[in-house]
Length: 259
Length: 53
Image (cartoon, rainbow over the protein chains, first blue to last red):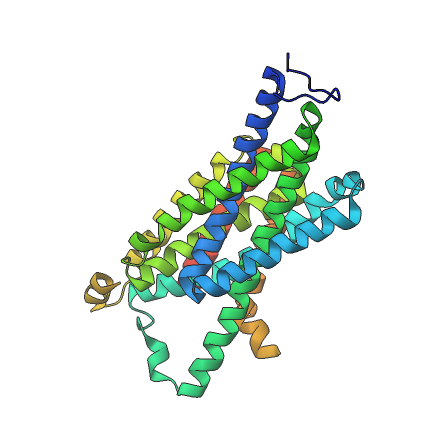
């Protein structure tokens, strides 16, 4: 039982409230880690400043939606499957393209730095277009996960006050950002094509999970829940390297060493 | 605009690969929901293998 203050408001949380806050913190952390994985992947491609901008824009849209719709949470819950499916399909289209490109580089069918052979203007256009697309990937990833955290806060927040529930979700966001920033330096030492390949695997994994989960019902399609994301990532990573190895061209071994 | 869309989503083969894989997985989800997800992943890997050659 909590201690009651002068105006009847609880000063300390009860065990049940701590339980609710912890559940929101942990569940939100899972969603934030998923969002941060996408932002991290995009940041390695378009830079931290632009990726952070996309993430901030995604969070701002979530905040705006909360402010505008407020009690209209039921509508958001009804549509979350469709939102998840739409974002998942976008990630599949984007991720499969990157996945194939990285496999072709590993197998030697595309030069590791083929863009260097193109004219500077075209190269810049390509980079800008890819940068815009990557920005949208980060934005949509954070938007979707932010919406899911919002649903969590509302769904589990009845055990404690709404500010405390939102505070738990915000605290987990800060923790995840801190852990993610610490990973920046080690990741910069990974070779470029390997990095792009891992990014493609991550984006494909999220795309696979959200697209069919959103269309056919996440619990029915993915009974293992979020753990499936790790399994998908491992499957795509292993399969891609196998495809690259099977389709490698003469002389690609040296390229593979550099990638 | 066309070039931008192509850069984002890839060529027609990429779009068709995703569409076919998703439709097949969605159809399978009506019969065996738990098999739909792994099937989608396998179809996408097969599509990537075809596109990589």
